[in-house]
Image (cartoon, rainbow, N blue to C red):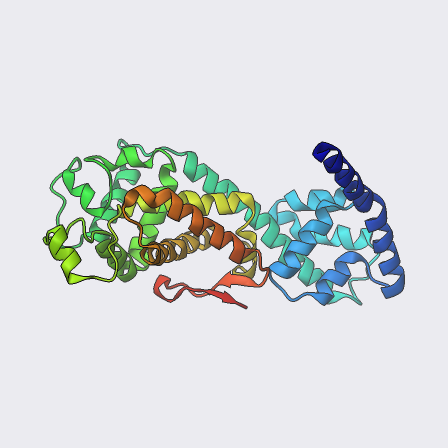
Length: 327
């Protein structure tokens, strides 16, 4: 019975998309004198609300030119918009703003696609201890997080002080490749004060000199105790999943007026890192074994927030000042 209902539902959805929806579009154009792209641009403010609708309109268009516009090279955006306006019989002289709006949204769309490819490339590139650039980034990470503690050696137990699992951090980057290192270093260098505070908090009570009984007697608000670097790599995975699933389109289309780039993604990571830190404290888990539960709950919360097309992170960057705001 459930299978039958599913088939019937899919049939009516197909019927709506192929027949009724196109009929409604035709009727709307006759009534308003504008095509769907014109109505979207004129009735929606710039940002995710407009770009998401334009993206959907182009993807489900019956014209191959409109469908292929989603994968055009950035250098071909202007020419593609001209072809679309010719196809839709829109006079650019009487509709100058339409061309500008379409170009802006198309740049965001192709920029997002390019960002996914760039992030995927970093994720697939393994950490290579023979690569001087990789080693330099790792040492920079140590210096940013432990400015007053010289590293005694490349292979050292000191790495555990910033949240790596063993003597050699390269083994911890296997899941996210260089992407995890790039994000951690960006956070440590571009919002060092916040990164250092999160690191210090994460070491409580693990690095506390007090006994467990003394800690409980002090009745501190919350006990934290997680591995900073490992959690950062895990939050990188969360940010990556939001990106490739398309959930981050809402945020990036609202904060990147042109093409989203790697810096936007890294700023998003910084926000997620700080917010997860707060979320972890509020959840007050018994120990690190509850990490997956807390992470899943945090992931669901972010997904709910990003379903609002007007939702975005603050466009300026300072992780200590970032909050989800309703534009």
